[in-house]
Amino acid sequence: FQRAVDEVMRQVHSLSGKNDGLVPMFINTNSGQFTHLGVYTLGARADSYYEYLLKQWIQGGKKENELLEDYMRAIEGVKKHLLQRSQPKKLTFVGELAHGHFSAKMVRSATAFQNPNQQTTAA
Image (cartoon, rainbow, N blue to C red):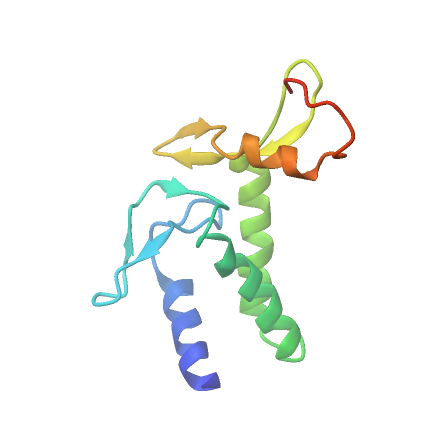
């Protein structure tokens, strides 16, 4: 299994279509190429790639520097493209980037992390 996983990660590492380490949400299983180019998110199905970069690096004895480099590049991409601050409270939230346009699609899910006893107000 390890060889298969390593080959998939090498394939993803070599693909074009990344944006500052962020990868598009889908890969065509027949061609092995990204689809939906220009759409970057940490939403459902997309966040696993970043999670597994770090997990594989740790589980591999922290020897596969390519995995760590891809992870660190992606974190910088998240900070540059997917994080914004609300107005007027300056709360940090994660959104999505689609064809160069930021969308605050994930803002509502952020309320799940607030104190349940606290009254929710607009960010």
